[in-house]
Length: 188
Image (cartoon, rainbow, N blue to C red):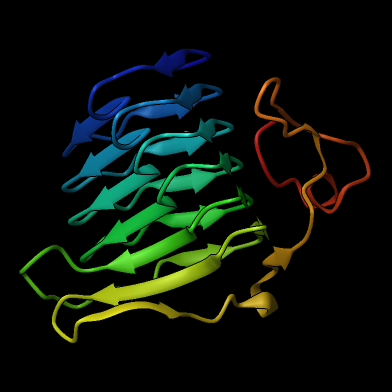
């Protein structure tokens, strides 16, 4: 799935299960739930996409996903930028997470408490999120326990320097010379 505008779906913009699609260079916005909902044993490549104002999250990784989520921009999704559920272990690198209640959340699924894995995330940029990385568990009824942002793994808290982040005319291309461009973070 390459260079598409995916918008207006009642549920998820893209949904796949036990598959490994390549999803590159898309604008995925204003969908009723997730921009992407991945479920089961997956190993997708999700690169250089913009996830904007989806009603739940930009991407939801459920069950046993092993997707590579790299070089994307997550902006103002209404709940999370990225949700990692149960035994999912995506690789999360060089993304920009801006203006979410929670940028990345790791949690178990509804009333089935399980072990929650901490995904591999490095060299990501976080800006103006209420919480950057959290963990929630049904078993211990804990919500939004803030996890370490792992700055030693190259994660940054810095302004991504978008061309424009106004509601009327957003332009999520990143200005030259910003921390994001220096480290190859975010969608081009």
